[in-house]
Length: 450
Image (cartoon, rainbow, N blue to C red):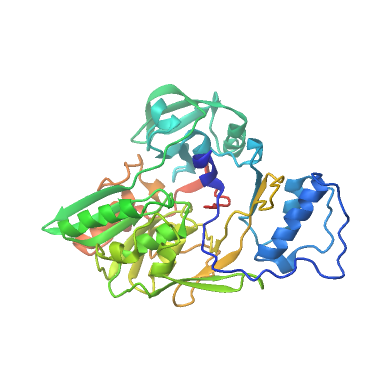
């Protein structure tokens, strides 16, 4: 269930102390509902939302306690909230089901410049049901469960996938505008293992560039990051490309660990992040060292900074799937290093939170709340990117088919960066907007790391 949960979770953050005020005003009278009833659960939900929720002051004063729990929770949410969620830990049907967390791949349905509609696989997780079935990045999907994909049915086909435990796909390879080598592949529902960090070193005329593909930010990744940066440092890497295009986020501590090893001029006490909450949460500021240390398994800031590359700039590859802790990396590095963002605008999750569970002795309530609790800002007080963070070099990766494997020098986003590093220019030939995205299989929801 751990891998399954990672796709609905908000970013974890450190609470030093929350001054908990009374959740109810003296005038408010809540009926005494029977213990264990839906209404009593809803009261618990309301109390915790009043305590933690960023938009607590916008919650309705007289909600309908008789609603089912998920509907009651939804009735409390601000219209500005895209990310808060609630799940019943004893009912898997309450969890968000997506192509990525059920089968281990993502695809996009696109309309090419000539009007042609095609569905391209953009991501296949390692050791996933999709990889085990033979799917690869760059393959074209022609049919899903026997239905030919069109612009008119792309969304309905996508919405039908969570209702199945198998996917019958007709796939092929892209060649000069045509799909060849068609075959049928059945993908079975299952779990995907933790994804490794992928690294490469490119060398042109003795100038070395490091590349990191980071799928997510789980706690406990500082050791892997430290190893990669140690290899880069020994090799003499002078430029760095961090590929976060499909990274939904995770632990802020791990994001801070990554940031600790990139710029020059920072210390353990350099400010890293500010969290701003409601009247109970207040404002919480964390240095690099404090944020890294929130993960008890992490290496210390000092140990990580030993392998810092001391760079003055970093290239970050992004897409609409870049969210949460990944966006914190982009925004919170900016006070210390030139961030050159390449690709598409990010999702725009400038918020963070943690899981709220029943901490009473009885622990009778099995529901778990994932509310937005904080807005996040960098050392200069910059944040407020709910519309996404826009790239300096906008490039649509779907304008060049077939999609090349991530980390290969000819892959469109990486190729653009390597051109800029080695030839001082970027080929904008493929950065036009003639390719339209009809729908994407993964639609980011709340991403919480408890």
